[in-house]
Length: 152
Image 1 (cartoon, one colour):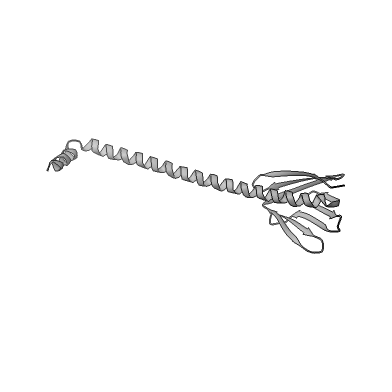
Image 2 (cartoon, rainbow, N blue to C red; image 1 turned 135 degrees about the vertical axis):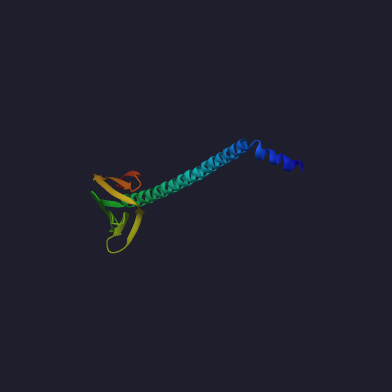
């Protein structure tokens, strides 16, 4: 019985302050809930960005490794903007170019094609004496430069 009389007093005497307290509580709860959702969205976006950067770094590392091995075995190189041709001492010939699907492709003369990296927007090469400089630009803005020399 005491509860009912207390409830009646809240409804009649302090109705304005009760409604204000309920609205204030709801507003603060919604504010905290929106902050939680914004934090989750920001963390998800950050994780996606880090994963993409990790994948781009893995592509660069693979291209770096393959190019380094081919250049070390080369006896002749022909570097042009957008393409590279390497003649190895064992007679193999490899051509590097970026295709229309934004893939760095390594093609062996006589057959055999391999995708070395994806998401590549540009390949810039220059060869001076026995030193090759290769710059790869990826679609996400990352660029890497490899400077490697052939073995004598």
